[in-house]
Image (cartoon, rainbow, N blue to C red; front, side):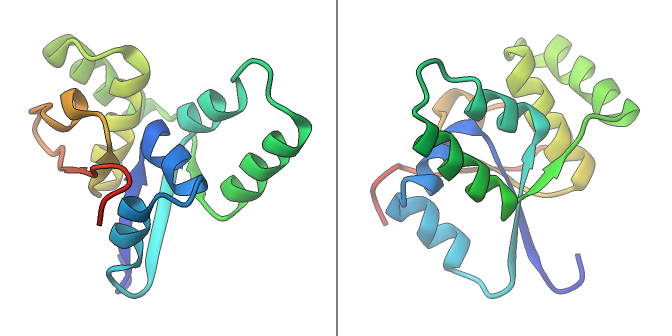
Length: 132
């Protein structure tokens, strides 16, 4: 980790961070030298919203430029399949969780169900949006 604090943001926490939500900001700014990651799945979900205004798409792209976007690879795929089979989470959530597991970093989410997911190597940080 090179002295950095690293987090994987799922789609809802990434969108909240983009909007400037205080709870996500508090978590990400609580420690110096924080590096945030998102899965390629999160990037796809954020950019796939129907009816995005060009200014919104540009804001999302600028936000993502500051993130480490982690692509799928064979190991993430293998872990995601296992997470999906054992937890019954939706496939996009399983892929995002698998990416966090593969990187060995906490998954930040505002999704209570996802935050309760029990799987070896998965550490979640539940954020309560708009609270700090």
